Length: 253
Image: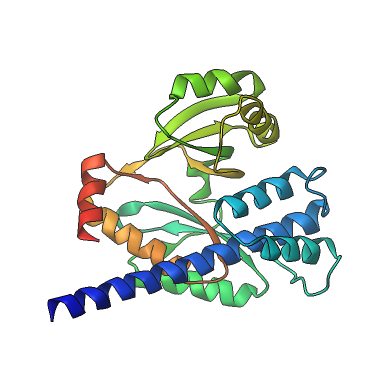
């Protein structure tokens, strides 16, 4: 019987991974559509669209899906939705600050989904501005840490283009810059032949809350609940944890 239950568990995990991949594809495609609608359908003339397409390709989104999204956004094909960006902010368990960026065609549905996810996870929504001040809007470029480079060499490659700092985050380097320097920094990376996973504008916390394994489990449950909503596009938090704690959390999983 143990073999059967293990297979059932594996099957469940695969289904969960497939479901998450489907949601990730949907988010990446939505980004392409909105970028094309906002700045035009030519990636060479629209850096935001270029970066959205690159990120989708890195995550194995099929080229057909990418091209259809680009055409819907630019108006070359019909069927594009009227997407609206809405930010929600609040606190998760243990006082973790949470920003939730939604891209939705139904404001009421998005608000309801976010509110339910916060409440069920032991968090609470907050007034606009009461949490977002803990974050700064930055250009963020994610570079895989493949062991053949380090923070200093990456920083030297992009410093003159406007990069402010390089952080190590797990198996990636995160290059931070001002949003209007993002294209220049990304271009400097490309000129140096350095591969990158994504380049986009996001939110970086100015102060961080350190959590133990139980705290990480609670905030990750909240993130999972928020990601159940198709309207949720990005989630930013200010929690951090030691490598030991993250290892303990992953072993629980």
